[in-house]
Length: 236
Image (cartoon, rainbow, N blue to C red; front, side, top):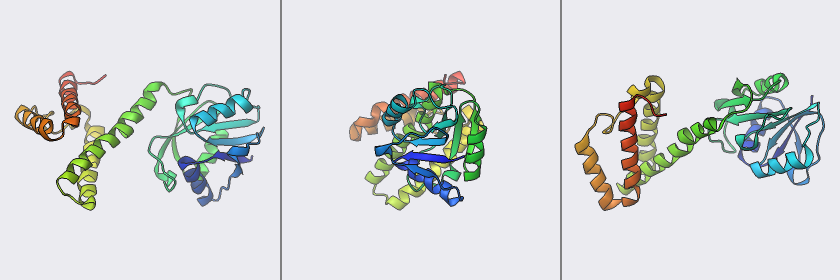
């Protein structure tokens, strides 16, 4: 079975490198001069808008012998012979995808599973189509975490820490904080909100109002949400 790929950008480059490193060269199709194929496996590593255009223009009805694999859940549907291989992680062109957890969605995925397994990529097989909750969980654990880490980094820069020092401090704290929650759930929360240290919370809120008021509301809302979550024993 021939395995094709078309696209550009981070996931396109990273997936190519991972496949080639494991002796699995892919047949490339120029995404700007796309020529549709009718059998094999086609990895569609393009933006959501381009993928939607491709599916509408070339594959409203996917040929019986062709399996199309998307990398983004945004336009994935339960259409026959359409599949989703989603990285539950940020990916750049140099990412080693064998270190990234993926989820594979769709039905009748045996041939796709066999190929992906040969690349060394680790994946969790799921039936059907992910709900919005799946992607929202990635937004919370990934994108929102990025914002919080960026905020913490900017605060330490204001305190004259070097980039190396900041990476060491924040990197370790993010790692251990995440481990605490993954292993212990509600009991893994630490910090002023978790121990109801009102005096510290008031002092830090006043400091932010005076010096960095643009993040005061974020600090207050997150503090309140942590306290509510611990009190209720859940967040949903």
